[in-house]
Amino acid sequence: MVRALPSTRSRASSPVRVMSRSEPDPTYVRLDRAYQAFQSGDYEQARQLYREVLTRDPRNRDALLGLGAVATAQGEGQQAQAVYRRVLSQNPGDRVATAAISNLGMGPGAAAPQGEARLKQALAQDPGAPYLNFSLGNLYASQRRWSEAQQAYFNAYRADSRNADYAFNLAVSLDRLGKPRQALEYYRRALETAGQQSAFSTDAVRTRIQVLEAAGSREGS
Image 1 (cartoon, rainbow, N blue to C red):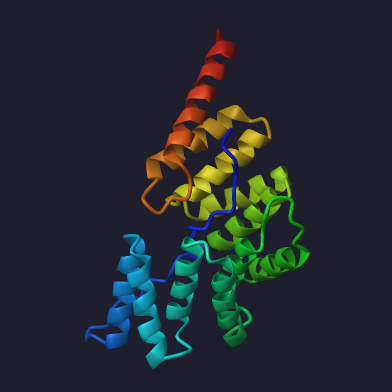
Image 2: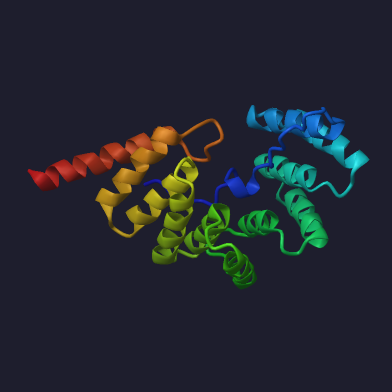
């Protein structure tokens, strides 16, 4: 059985890519190089470049979010939380940092009323934000509130159907709710859009698809 886990590679915990200006600026060049390094899995290079930006501009939001994403990808939860809290100290309403720090604070069976309240407050300002809906879904999943998780994941997927993690977690929530046909559809979609940055095991998804297809064939015979 594939389990739904709070993804550390969701959009909410990914660095922001900054488009270069017509005239190259050292800060923008470093941010773009850092983003490319992060995407390729070279986390140490990404970390170094983000730190170089912060040496010149200690309040640079993109560099801070990038550092938080690097720390998250490397399993440095406390460091990631510290960075995201730094972003929130500059802008308490920052939605990306809110979603990321809410994901970091969740574990199996964890009760996170403050995190839920923060996410809902952020969603009230931007109901269609996929990373906020995904983070809320992760929170519900950590508490086994599968019906609510399914709706939140669906909202995230509806806003960004190219994100394989959104499709995967939606599939898992449907699976947990005993809806194999719908789950199978979204497992397939997750595989179709999966990439290097996807947080789930494609082999595990293929195995689950085979199990569901076999069960469906038995029911139809």
